[in-house]
Image 1 (cartoon, helix red, strand yellow):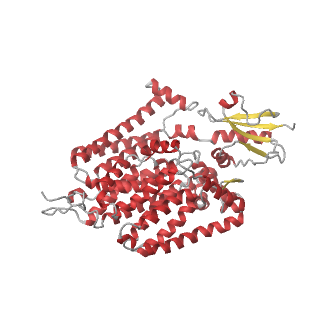
Image 2: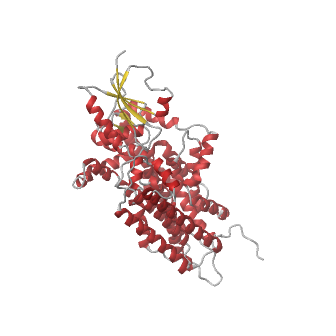
Image 3: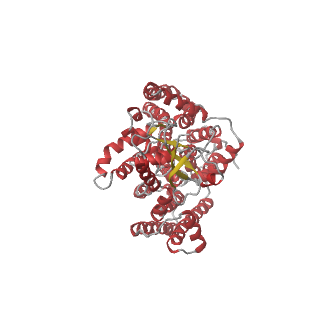
Length: 585
C-alpha cells in the first residue's frame, strides 16, 4: 500500500455530483426567504424599532440627527450611522409612492425595509462569488480519478458556491435578523463583502483592495468597534500563512487608506457637531469590552450552536478533514473570519445574536467545503435527517395554528392562549393559501429526493434550505397576526398618546423615568412622543412592572403623584407603563 501523503486531498468527487443546480430554484428560494416576514407587520423591539426610530429622527429631527443617530432628542450613541443613512434615504424617496396605497406611518415602515433587499443581495452575492473563487483554486480540487470522470474546476467551484449559499439561507439564527431595520443585516452584508474582497485580491488585487477598503469603512459606520474589530482582525491575519497570500499584503495599504478616509469623513464632523455624542460613543464602545467571565462564556457555548445550526457541525468537520491544508486559502480565510468574531465576543460584556451573526457567513463557507469530503452513506443519512427534522417542524407549526384557531389539542391551546392573552384568532385565507402552497412545495421536494435519488452533492443543502425557508414561510403567514399582536407597541402607544393629549397643559413638558430604549423608540415611531430627561417636568412616563409595584418599589418612591393612565401590552407580564402627574412638595 502506498504511504499516505500529508497533502493528499480529502475531497472525493465525480462529475455527476457537481450537476448544475437550477438557477430558478435558487432565485425563488431567495425571494421567498427575504420577502416572507418583511412586511405586513409592525416593527418589533428592540433593534427593529430602534433602527426605524433613528431613520425617522434623521428625517424629522434636528439637523445633527441626520449625522448622529438619535431617537427623538435622545442620543443613541452606540453603533454607527450607515443603516440610518440608507434607511432614511429609502424612506424619503419611496414614502410618497406608498402613501398612495396606505397611511403615512405604514408607508414609512414599508419604505424603511427596502434596504433589507440590498443587504440580503450583498450577502448572498458576496458569499456565492467568494466561495466560487475559492472552489476554482487548485488547493481544494478533488482527487484525480484513475480513469477520469472528476469534475472540472468550474463545475466544482459552482457546486461549492451553491452549497454555501444554501447553507447561509439555512442558518437558523440570522433568518429573523435579516428582516430587521437594524444594523445587524448591514454588518452581516459588510462582513460578506470584506470576505469576498480578500478572496478577490488573490487574482485581482486592485479591485479587491478597493472593495475591501469600502468594507473596512462600512464596518465601523455600521456597528462601531463591536462590529468592526473582528472584521479588522480577520483581514489583518488573513494574508499571513502562505506566499500566495503574503504577496498581496502590500495592497492592504490601499484598503486601509480608503477605509480610514471613509471613517474620518464621518467622525471629524461628528465631533464638531456634538462633542457629547462623540464622547459617549467612544465610552459605550470601550465599556462594551471586558475580561471574559464564566457566565458569559457559558451563555455563548449554550446559545451559539442553536444560532449556527445546521452549519457548525459541517464547518468543524471541514476543519478536521482539511487539517493538512490549513494554510490553503479555502480553509484559512473563512477560518480567520470565523475565529476573530468568536474571540471578540469572549471579551464583550454582553454577547448575543448581533455578535453571533458575524460567524454565519464564514461557517457557511467552511461547511460547504466539508461536503466533498463526506462518504456517501453519511451524506444520505444527513439527507434523511433534514427530511425528518423539517417535516416535524412544519407539522408542528400547523398543529400550533390549529390549536390557536380550534382550541384543540387542549394543552397546546392553553399554552398558546397564555402567551396571546386578549388576541382574537381569525383565519386569513390568503395567508393560509400561501402556507398550503409552501407545504405542498416541501412535499414535492421530499418526493423528488425519494424517487429520483439525485447524485448531486448539493441535494442535502437543498433539503435543509428548503425546509427552514418553508418553516419560516408558515410562521410568517399563519402566525404573523398573533406574533404582531404580542410584539407590537402600536396599541399601547396610541393609548398613551391619547392620555397625554387629555392631561397635558399648555407648554407642559413630559419626562421619561426608567423608559427603555426600545420602548422610547416605539412611542416615537407610532406617535412621535419624545419625552425629555428634564426632571422638573410635571408629567412623567414611567416604565415599571407589576412585580415591582407589588413589592412596593415605585420608581418615584414616596413622591406625591397622581396616576393619570396605566397600560401595557396585554400578553406582557413584566412590563407596565404609567403616566403620572408629579406634585410639588
